[in-house]
Image 1 (cartoon, rainbow, N blue to C red):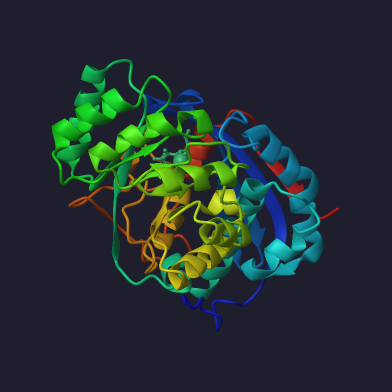
Image 2 (tube, rainbow, N blue to C red):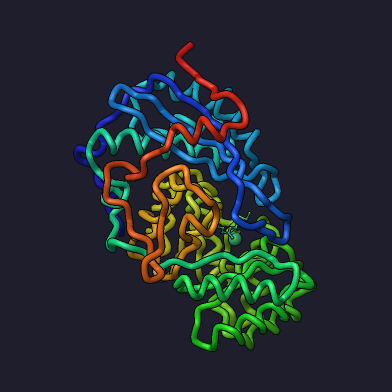
Length: 382
Ligand code: SMG
Ligand code: MG
């Protein structure tokens, strides 16, 4: 069981204001999944201003509600109208109190996670403790994988994958959808060889009618198949898991520790993708990690095209003992020409867990200002 530090680092902060920033960052190349194509990252950043200093959190919601029901403008509104006022009312909080303060709002986990992360950042900066120390990190660096979007054709896909292999990535994940699955997987397996780690992610693009087709992936020796069916349909994933040898891994479906335990107990998932935003925050993410570790279920850290703010926290999370598979924790240059913090640079296929207080990342506020798509919102006590 992971122990979250409680002494010293748990001193509360008094929240004086919440600032919401919305910025646009062009992607170095378009990222296409079964649900659409992105050319820029529309990011919502939360800054909490406290009596003990500031903290930053990143909201992982996409511009449109296509990965899950949450989206940037919705998160912006729910933080401005509900979460920030509740936090300001509570006034004196620890990160561990935030979920309780927000429990009157149903769902909106990505919005809640962003605010909780900002409070944790402020709290730990004030205490001089890093996210890694607080979470119980057991390694100084983490193995990194890369998520490769759907390409216009196989040649372009192979060129992109070759580049990532050359950069040292320790695992390749291919986005798949009906019509773009067996052929790209076969071509990439051929390119990278039988021993290289390879997995696929369907982002809910299939139905139970595709089970026989998906079984054909077994011949490629994949680490796992991620989220083939809609998020509510745990039963369909049970059927697939019974039918194929490739391990089934849930992403979108896993919204809490209870859901994770249920899906594991039902044999719908034998590996779990953990994303703090999807489950309402890093503290819930750690509880899922602990539940999986207790049950010998391997986990890995998912990604949502984060800037350095979210990436710093993800890398700290991925240093927990149960994260035994490489995560979607890629270097900054896989996404952006320039990051909003110091760049995360791969060394031998790994990223270092930041050691500085809080996330350890320094937000380049001049870039936040330069890249804004609307003026910052400042929410203060009424
Ligand atoms: O951060 O490298 C990243 C992206 C990883 O594939 C990735 N994320 O379903 O796991 C997933 C997707 C969700 C975002 S797709 C726009
Ligand atoms: Mg996924």
